[in-house]
Amino acid sequence: MPWYDTQNKLETVIPGEQSQVFPGAPPGLVVPLDPGVPRTLAPTQYHNFGPRIGFAYSPDATEGLLGKLIGGPGKTSIRVGYGIFFSSIEDATGFVEVGDAPYGIYYAAPPNTQLATPFFDRPTGNNEGQKFPFVFPPANASPKNPDTNFNWAQATPISGSDYLNSHDKIPNVQEFELSLQRQLGSSTVLGVSYVGSVGRHLLTFEDANPGNPALCWALDSQNPLNILSSTSPSSCGPFGEDPGAGALTAIQTTQAPPGFPGVTSFASTRVGVGGLNTPATDNFGSNADMKTVASSSFNSLQVSLKHNTKYVNFLVAYTYEKSIDNGSTSFDATNVFNSAASRALSIFDVPQDLTVSYTVQMPFDRLTGGSAKRLTAGWALSGIATFAKGEPVQISEPNDDNSLSGTFDATIDEPNYANNGSSLFVNRNPRNHDGPGGTPLPYFNPNYYTFEVPGQGVGNAMRRSFSGPGIYNFDMALLKDTRISESVSAQFRAEAFNVFNHAQFMNPSGNINNTGVFGFVTGARDPRIMQLAMKFTF
Image 1 (tube, one colour):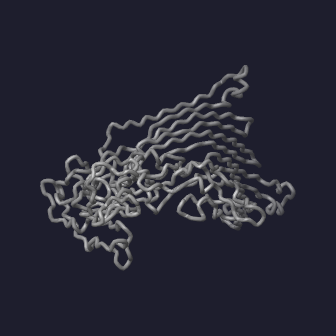
Image 2 (cartoon, helix red, strand yellow):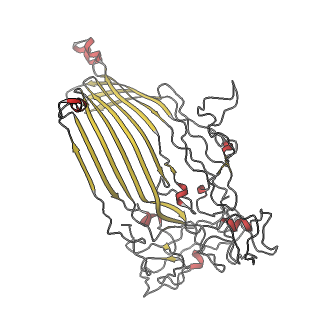
Image 3 (spheres, one colour):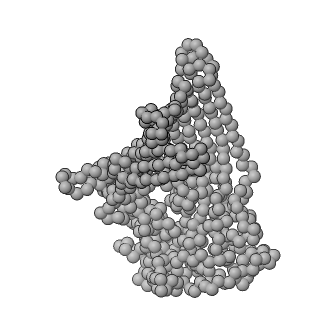
């Protein structure tokens, strides 16, 4: 179930609802004890059922082809498992919302401000009003004892607050596995597994009050077809979808002029963002709506070979997988107009990974005897070698609001595919240059993408569709264990990370607004690092 506050000091947004606990609250802002608003904000789902089932089987055939494949009784095991797991929505209702009106003010200026004048909008000079000092409402407010004295004029416009959606469900994941283990000889085990999961009702952020991109573009001062009258108080544009209370348009037409894709008609309306504001009010800026509308899927083939003897231990692990979601992290923002359009490779997806770890006990102790053996015994060489594909490159068009959505998180903006016939990849090896001493080549073709078209919402490029540079790395350590007494021992370690000093490149820039850098690799992981250590155990 979602968490709740023992004093009911939470709030959420339900468009069109008027709070009865705070009758003066902006329409849409409600709190626990209001009709239909539980203490957990979203309803508790007592019917959730999370079964888990699994079994293991060891065949005992000894003859024929099957007997040879399984190696006889006790040499092979088959395991199958399935389960449904539910989780609380972290502390979204008990921590993220703390300090929001009316139980506090978490003030985020709708447009940028200056440090010296934090309540004046820098682009327009509009005074948003003094927010502090803040007077808390009484703790016992209820529909039968409503609070009519809270100063809502001081708290509005509410901007930068986070609200748990009242229709949220409990996130769940289904996990399943089919694995086979086969003993090879007396010291080696081979494992082959299919491991997968499916996540549903995962938490993501969407703006609670997005703008209307097509309408905003119709009113944008940069649009040659701008249909505002010359006496109109304001026009619309990036980061300017919400110009203030009373900023009405001069539109009186019923048929949209040409040039506005997706717009069929206009009416007298407010320039600003979505349905929480009215032509006479400006109560809400951009606020996050925490919704459990994200999903995920993960499928993988996992193979391992483990060997354990007196002198040699090693583990070889290979994973071939694909992870897809539209919310890789709990507070990942998704497309406010269509959350499914944000579905892409998970931010942590690594298509292939081969890792080899090992420890070799050096037989130097066989060369000497007596007291000299204290110097030759206890030597070991260990290491980890990693060969992996890279993580996905994040393609984005942040901080320009060309989508005209006016959302709290400009990183939801995506460019468009260019569709110009050009190839995506140019140079997947960042070591290559354009001839001897030439300039660096981009990892992927920057011309493959174009900027969002104003008025048409978020671009159509998938935000993560391909991987960046991979990893080819060796870490090694030389160890010496020395017994000093029966209860005291010492270990000397000489360690080297990236021992062969192989360049491990970072992902290229996926920000289309980074002119001259977009598509290029500009950084690398750590070079060779060496260190010495001594450890005493007693």
